[in-house]
Image (cartoon, rainbow, N blue to C red; front, side):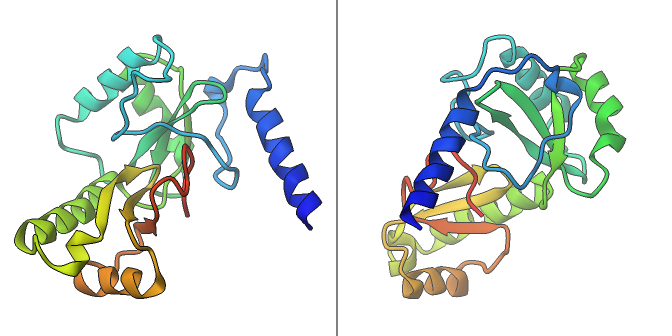
Length: 192
């Protein structure tokens, strides 16, 4: 079993570094694969190709704080430096032309995101509001960091035991859009 896990990890590392010559901008990526991503909360200047920076900036500015109900955020696949726009719903290609106009570019892929970006922002606000009104209780003292990552709100807990995770969900929110984890448990990847 240990050899199988080692083999799978080795294949993942090799596949992440493999260069392809196909045009990824017109393909829909698979949501079931591990994707190394950078997203809204990370400093995308570290590790993002310079040609994507204006496109990402244009995407963020195009919403002016009013996110579409089907917009679920974006990620960047670091293995091929491809922008992936996430859509909440089954038909990701339905909105491709709209985003191509919005970005004035076809240099992106589209993928399924379970939660709308506005929903993720609301969950993040719920956590922020709780922290601001309960600054010194055990639940807030256990929160190390939280932000939107991929298509979840990841909350990094100092102690991520079953008891502490249950306290967080009971006291703050039990939203399925939250992923509770310890710091650096999912470095550079999406946590489910």
